[in-house]
Structure formats: C-alpha cells, structure tokens
Length: 565
Image (tube, rainbow, N blue to C red):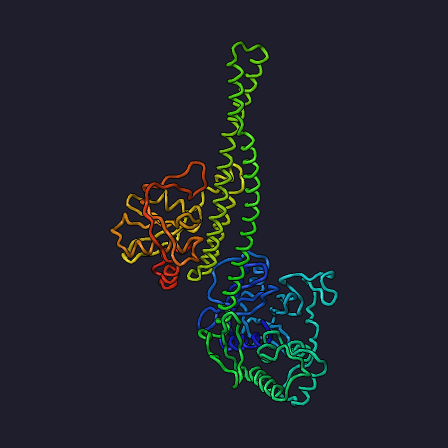
C-alpha cells in the first residue's frame, strides 16, 4: 500500500470513523490486527497488517472471532478499553498513521496506536501518554537494525526522514523537469529518486509507456504530458478527491487525470476502504491458496519418489524369485532318477526348500507391490483434487482453502504411519462435507473433493437406486446422483456426467468418457486406500467439462448445499 492509497483510505475513513469508540481487538495471524469501532451507524472493522509483502490499512466486513487470545490483542484490548478514536493522523509523504485515542471526544489523547507501512520494516506500536512503547507487533533488536532498534518500554522514535524532495504543485515545470534530468536514468528510477511518495505502481501510472525511457531521451510533448499527470496526481492528494479504479490482474489506482479517466467509481460501493479490503483479501487468499497447493504438490512429489523407489525395489526382488519353478523341476528330476543316492536326495530337498521360500517371498512381494501401487494411485488422485481446487473459481476462496486443508490432513493420515492413539483420534473426525449440487429435477448430486469424501458418498452413504459416475480410466472425483430419492431424467444424467468429467484430470478435453454404474455394483478393494473401488458392468456416457464449469459458475448460493467440502 503506497502513500497515495493510504491517503485515499484515510480520506474515506475519517468522516465515517471519527469519532468512534473502540470495542474489540483480535489478531487472526502473527502480522495482522483486526479492530472494531462503534460508530453512530454501527460497528466498523479495520484490518491493520504489517506483513512484509502486503502491509495495509483497509476496512473489512465483520470478521469471524479468531485470535482474541493473542498477547498483542489482549494488551490493546486492555489499554484502549472504552476509549474514543479522536484523530487519524498522517503527515507528509511518510506511510505512518497514528490512531489517537482519548477517554472521550474533546479530551487530549492518552493512547496512540501507530501503524507503519514500510515494506519489510512495517510494524504496529501502542504508545502511552508519554509516547513510550507499551506493546508492538514485532521487536526490532540491535542486530536487526543499527538505525532504529525498538522494543517495549522504549521512547517512540519516528522512522528516518525520507530521501528526495517532497512533491509540490507550486513547483515550476522547468525546475521539476531539471530535477528529474539530473541523472540519465529511466523514468521508473528517476521519479522515486527525485521525489518522495513515488511507488513503483504510481510511477507506472504516471509514466505509462514511457516508464523505461531514459529522461534524456524524452520529447517535449512527453514531458508536458507527464507533467500534466503529475499535477493531476498532486491535485487528488490536495483535494482528497479519490476514486477507486479496479483493473483486474493489473491492480488498481485511486486517482485519475482528465486525459486518463476510465471508470473511476468502479469498486467504490460501500466505501473505497472496504472495496480495497475485499481486493486485498481476494489477492491474499489466492496467494495463500497457491502457496498451499505448491507446498502440497512438493510433498506429493517426495512421496511419489519414495513410493517409486520402493515399488522398483519390490519388482526387482520379485523378478529374482521367478526361477522357483525351475528349482522345483530340478528337484523333481533328481528324485526321478532310477536309484538316487543320498547326496542327490539331499540336493533335491535343498532345491525344494529354496523353491518354497521363493514362492512365499513371491506372494509377499506381490502384496507389497499392490500396496505401493495403491499409494501411487492415491497420490495421482490427490493431484487431481488440487487441480480441481485451483480451477474452482466458482467456489468461495474460504471453502477452497478449507478443502485443501482437509486434503492435506487426509494425506498425512493415509501416507504417514501413525501410532494407535493418533489413528483413533483421526478416525474421530467429523462427517465429510462433499460438494452437493441440485440437479434440474431437484435431485442431489454429490461430488467427492478428496479420497475420504469419495469413499463416504460411494460406499457409506449410497443407497440402492443411486448412480455412480467417474471419468473412465482417469483420476478424479466420484459423483453420485441420489436417484433413490426420485426418478432421474436425461438432464440429470448429463449433468452428472459433466461434473464427473470436470472434476477429473481430463478436464482440458472437449469430451470425456464417463462410466455410469449403479452404486450397488461397487465393491471396495481390500487393502486399498479409501475411495478405491471396483465395479461390474456399467454404461459409458460422455461428459462436457466446459458445460459443467458454466453450470457451476451460474449456480446460486441456494443450489450449493454443501460447499464446505
């Protein structure tokens, strides 16, 4: 969050937040605080984050209760109890905001909550009446910073002064241009080095296509156009007339010029600070989902390598047992001699014992090979589930993160050996929550989003008359149409086929072969992982993944009966 965005957020918050009464503090993660203030119109929640890669001050919808027991949140709760927020102060071009608190409006401030949004140096600090640090988000030790170490009990020292010149609309064009032309640098470097408050996104918004052009190669018209945008940006800062323009993957901007205005009011519903809160939450959740998926894929890759090595070793051992029949024939030949002597009988007995041992070993090795094959199938199916979660733009991000957590815990249970007590605890997990979609005829379609859910809907909850769908010869989710509750028509069957094709590794195909089998024809495979079944008979139909995705995107919330899974 750069200075321009911070100014825009404060401009939006001040008329709605001042004055207000502090009521609640909670800390959902180590670098984020959520503060609730009571205004005349109700509760207003702010999120203050000093995460190195996403420091921010935004408004958020009422959050779930979480993190109220952290030390920092308890200190803030105790220190600011029943106090009034009387000022939101930000001076100059520094990204530092002071929340000044007093016993009641009109009284001098007795507590100050300072939020510093400075990249990896971001922090939050609670100050007392003498501006000494009572609590802070992170301690800065001497070995971490020689310039500004700070800890509990220290006097608060502001950040070091910024380099560069404070921008001013009164600066003449020629002086402004000469300052930027002091060094032959590209505009993306010249702007932040010459002036304060210029972030990389703002430099791109000001310079546009000229961002990488050296300042000594700019034409006069380009200088005038750049100066016009510069003055428009400064006018927005001075008049605090900000508008939020959400630009999708490109980010956003909170100011506009007369020559570069495009949908400035977009995203302003409910307030600019709240719209930015939604924007940041969406990006952070997407980042967290990507990181979690990458981490789980790496673990699956390590598990696969381990299983591949074990499987290769067992197959090599099995190949070495292939001569048991030859040994048996050699022993038979010795005993079939007309008059075998003592040594020949002993040799035959040894060959028989060796053959029996190899046959026993062969049986055990085949069981081990079957075991490792089953674990590899679980790994392949888990990768399909991860692909499903990343592609499920129709599903709320919170549900996707929850489903990924369920899959991670399930894999820990299936692929990591555990003790008896821990196994008993894992078996006491709650009821699986598969995705449930209502078919055109009003029947329920259940979609398993992990191995445990596949097993639950296909074998444990299935009733006589239900139909099971799965992409043919391809890892993916089980889909069960609850046709035991009513007569299914062709549209229901087609939707089930489309869903089975979409929730599979064959999602990228135009058409996918899908097997439809009555659930009473399914059989659990002994010794295999959950959700691994065999079936007899069945009918092959065709599913359209794109049609399923369109259907999922258009479903209303009431149609998604169980999106927790």
